[in-house]
Image 1: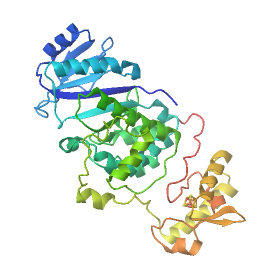
Image 2: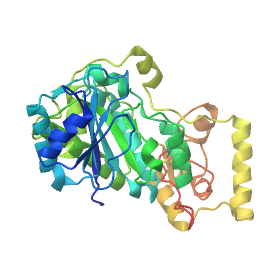
Image 3: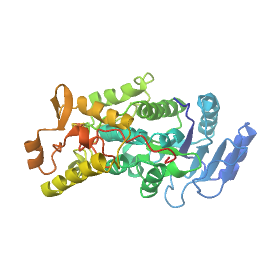
Image 4: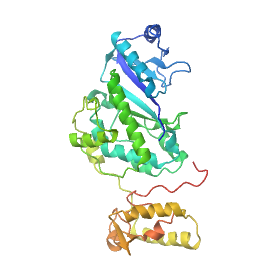
Length: 369
Ligand code: SF4
């Protein structure tokens, strides 16, 4: 598993002049630069930190933003000293600001399924995670991570980048940085903090999520309600919450009815009509078995059938996955969860997909990523 670096944004009140604050911090031995405007750029080479005025007119109460460079765990003592120096100098936390963490994910392009795995995990626990945001900071970390269905269709680096370019950054999980020089995902769920232990605990949780999703294909599951039990289940991914810092500020605030009604169930793939499905099944057989085109390789074929073998909806024959659900029941329902197809034929076709989104993406052709 790669050792990922992170970068951080702390927003705070108590100072209004980046140049003067910068001078004080440099006097204390920190490699800090400043900008008089809001840029979303990392510190320049040679500097560990950058102080910027926050977006003008947006955050009158927390006008300064401290950005770190990409750092590893060895840099946290320095971050801790810096946050202490700020607090001693009069900086105050404003909970209307958020604490943003960016986690580098260059490896997510090597295996597109990793983003889908992370998206499913976030989808399942997003209401729980949202309960960890201070209510006043919730406006910049809105519920609904971007496009689960669309992410599940990403197969190549270009797919990722196109999708990322069409999403908004004002989400709890912001993927617009996938196309940056250092590909990263930004997590914006945490309320403002200048507490280094809280910041580090939160960062470790975000890192654990990203690493977990890279190593395990998380299944698609319904949303969890924002309950203490669901919070425990979510935190167990990161080995619990030994310092108690993550739970700090957790609320069971309700998700708005608008989100609840729109998002209560995982999105279902659209289902074509019965004649269209019959025609598509026939065309698939001709294509893959007669013309021998659009076939997945043996490795992807076996991986698909292995998923079907463990699927409770599969109809087995001689102990092997035979059909995706009983044929009549499957073909009668519009929008049902099974398709009734013969799995040995369906799994060979590169253009076919599991109706429940369970199949791993095909192994990409050489050079596609
Ligand atoms: S295609 Fe999907 S839904 Fe159908 S049996 Fe296989 S895993 Fe289950």
